[in-house]
Image 1 (cartoon, rainbow, N blue to C red):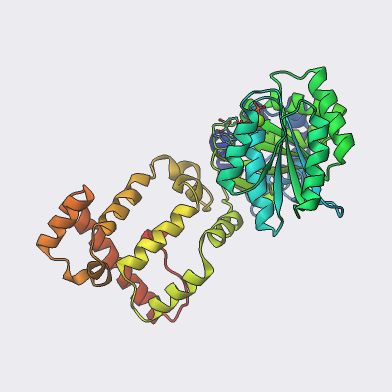
Image 2 (spheres, helix red, strand yellow; image 1 turned 90 degrees about the vertical axis):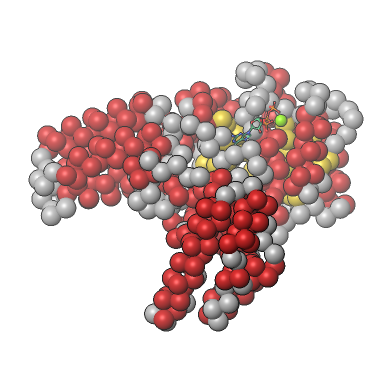
Length: 440
Ligand SMILES: Nc1nc2c(ncn2[C@@H]2O[C@H](COP(=O)(O)OP(=O)(O)OP(=O)(O)O)[C@@H](O)[C@H]2O)c(=O)[nH]1
Ligand SMILES: [Mg+2]
């Protein structure tokens, strides 16, 4: 995410930190460079200017320049200001006391509303709620069917009606929800190619009918300032409560994320980071700032791991590790858990120091994981539990069975043995740390 922005900021900051002594002049020079980087990332120019002024004032004020580590202090100032720019604190999704609590999605065509409906459904279900998706896009012929498909794959019910009265659908959906214990309804509205009067008045009418706890403006994050400008118009007409930026897995430059809060005064609540239904992240301004500055996002990483790792399995595994019974079968299980955390490239980007330069040369080979899976799958149960029985002829058989080479099989077994040794030495140290294969 925002790789180019991160890299360019990193270059400026390195230069700044590299100087033993800072003067007003070279601070100003760096500020001009940062301003240019922000503009290149498609940040609104007024916001970029204001941002730079704030940072510069703080950097030149107080005792920053005279301190022993002026560069680092300026990085801290930039981090703080970036955090403020994106909203300072996380604003969680709100629910009403009345039932159902309504979440309404608005935005231009193709911004990702329908996909988001499914993602949010899964998100609120994890919070213990019982969501219902509502098909309120009656214009595009396939829209209802698309929402139903999304609903099915998320295992969430979809409410739809064969009528062209959107307000009736909304009312009936709320009644249906009350009757069937759905405490949250998510309204998927129609998007249009451009902002037009019909779309705005329909959104305003749905808002009046349902009094939503949340109206989320869904914007394609790749469109930068266009998204911000569209947001302004939606704000005037439907006054939304929060923003969701989608397609942040693509090469979004960061302009929308860095400007939309300051322009609309509405919080970014989520980032959508892929087409799959679990690719949704709650938005935390401070975590995003540290990711942009290449300081990693350890908290999100840990959260992802916690979500993915089945607690019971983890406890069992730990026991096995302690008893030195860790086998290839367990190893296979671990791989599945890691895969659940999402693409490796994303995960690595959250580890401090792994951004930018470090990652550039490092192509994460997801196929390696697939290969390992194939190899372990081709082993017998006995082989997985007692890898030492895997002799030369067995290695050949496994290689053929998994469509790999004997060399691949050897490699895996060597790595596995190394890992076992590592675990052993860790145990001797008395630590209770969990081991992840291959140093993850
Ligand atoms: N890469 C990526 N693609 C996304 C994301 N969110 C949605 N998409 C894709 O974007 C396309 C449009 O998404 P929809 O959910 O249909 O958008 P919509 O706002 O409902 O569109 P309309 O109903 O036509 O207004 C689909 O192909 C989605 O798979 C995301 O976060 N990342
Ligand atoms: Mg749609």
